[in-house]
Each structure stands twice: as C-alpha cells, then as structure tokens.
Length: 418
Image (tube, rainbow, N blue to C red; front, side):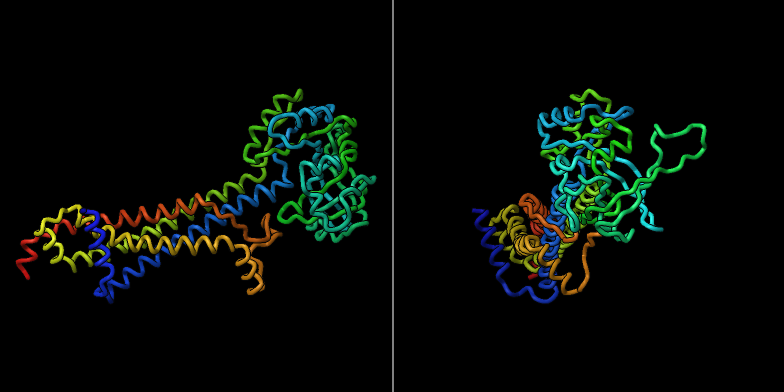
C-alpha cells in the first residue's frame, strides 16, 4: 500500500505543471547532462573496444605473437623445432626467422632497417604481411639476392620494384678482427622484388629477405636459425603459450611475446579507457546531483502537502519513497535517451568518422602514424549495462538526501503558518 501511494503521489507531482522557470531549467539540465554523459561514455568505451580489436586482429597479424630467440648458439634442426612447436596446445603455426640490424643504401640515401630472413612459405602461416603487397609479389622473394621493403622505406630511398640497392651490415662475430679497432661494414647487393604497405612504423623499419640469405649473412648452416616465431590462438595468452613451447625446446632461448614490442599500445588503450570512464562518470555524477537542487525545491514547495500527509498517518518511508521516485524519473529518462543515442552512434561510429573525414577533407587517423587509418568501434553489451547501472546508481544516491529532508518536515510548524 505504501509503495502504491508513493508511486501515485510521485506521478501526480511529476505531471503537475507548476514547476516552471528555474526549477524546470535545473530539472531539464540534469536530464540532458545524464543523457550526454551516458551517450559519450558508451561511445568512448566502444571506441576503445574497437582499438583493442584492431590491435589483436590487424597489428598482431604481422607482428609476431611470440618468439623464441637463441641465446648464444643458433637453434639447430629448425624444421624439427617448428614441427614440435606446432604440436603444442594453442599454437596455430610456427616459422623460422633470422633478424639482422642493418642499413639500406640507394645512391646517396641511407635508411636504417631491421632485416628479417624468412621462409617464404611458412612465414605466411604466422604473418599476413604477404597480403599487404602493393607492388611485386611475395613469392619473388625466392629469387637470388632479392628483398621486399615497406612503402615508407621505398619513399625514403626513392626506389621501386626492379631497382637494385645495397644492404650494409655490421660485421658478424665470425668476421670481427680483434686486432683492429674498427671493422668495416659488409655490403651486399639486393634487388627490390616487392613493396608492402601496412601502415605505421612497420613500413619504415621492416625489410624481408629469404631465409637462405639470412643464413648466409649469419654464417649459419642450412639447418640453423636464430629465432622460431609462433602464432597462437589467443594473443593475450601468448606469453604463457611461449613458455610452454620453450620448455619443450632443447635449445637455450630467450622468450619474447608481442607485449615487449607493442604492449605499450595495449597499455595506452587501457589507460585511456580508465581515465575516460572516470571523467565521464564524474560528468554523470555532476548531472545527477542537479537532481538534489530540483528535489529540494520540490520539497520546499510541497511542505504543506507533506504536513497533511503526516497528519493523516503517512509513514516517513512513504514520503521518502515519493521523492526518490520523483527524482529517479530524471535519471531514468536521461539514461534511456543517452543509452539509445550512445548505442546507435557507437554502432555507426566508423561510418560517421569517415563522413567527417570526407566533409572536412582531412584524416582523423593517419595510417603513417597509427596502426589503423580509421576509427574502429565495437559495441559491448557489458559496457552498456555498466554505464546504465552506474548512471542509475548515481541518480538514486542523489535523491536520498532531499527525500530524507522531506521526512523531517514538522506538521505543526508548517500548518500553523497557513
């Protein structure tokens, strides 16, 4: 009965048209503020989810999930090591790799790069780099003295497919003459057989040669390699899977996973998510506590009604619930509007960003700087529930004090002044 009376009174007070002017402005601003806060929070969380998905599906499609790098001696009989790694749980693929730091020279231009010697066939199982070729062909890497470079490297040096450049390499350990203070860099000629364009720093740093060329540079035997690359089912389990594979390897190896090279991106995404969540929750809190002003004015306006209700035997709980329900109305409306608007915008965020890019004639995200050239989005129902529940909880908290103040109205004092 008390709950029904509270609901009836709250609905009647809300439907009354007496609240005009400043009170109506405060009430409307609290509703709009909650709606904006909820909508923007859903948008931000969806964008962060999109960046996290892009990191896992796009960037980590070419960045190794995990690597087992030899400590002192090369890894022997790499074919057997690769086959053993593939048999381990959660390992999708494995491939050999030789990495060398060096420079590329074309005429009077130089560019520092990381040179990767890869098995042309097996590399395609652990990396999608072959799908980003914009000139030449990945299979041409099988040709003698061939090299595939990124678009940024090609632009820096001013080379195209078919042109020849020089690879400058530091002296390997076997080549170092301890009697000489300085050792000249070794030079090798290579022909550009392909150019890839992935975006970000990878284009400007990574070049590929065949595994046999890498073995020749490092003075390895055909069965020796420096690194075993792994592709795993769940990228966030890469460290654990790499350790399991390393324990089954009969070579001394360092264990690396993608978090060593790209983990800062994931940490940045999580940091932005946390900061934006806190900031926008505070925005919702400020909007919610505008309800305090609205309800206090409502309580002052309804003092005579409260006094009459008390003299008729209404309990304090009934009066308190009346004003709580009245205040929750703003929170419910604002949360509903913000949730619907935020979800619709989040679902179409990528298209909206592309429209703005075409309208403004500028890129919001540059592929030369970031690992994606579009604004990704992924709507997660858990984020929507969290946002809605947070907004409603803050609204409920904001209604408690004014509703409690209503229960402290003294009927004798109020009715004695009438």
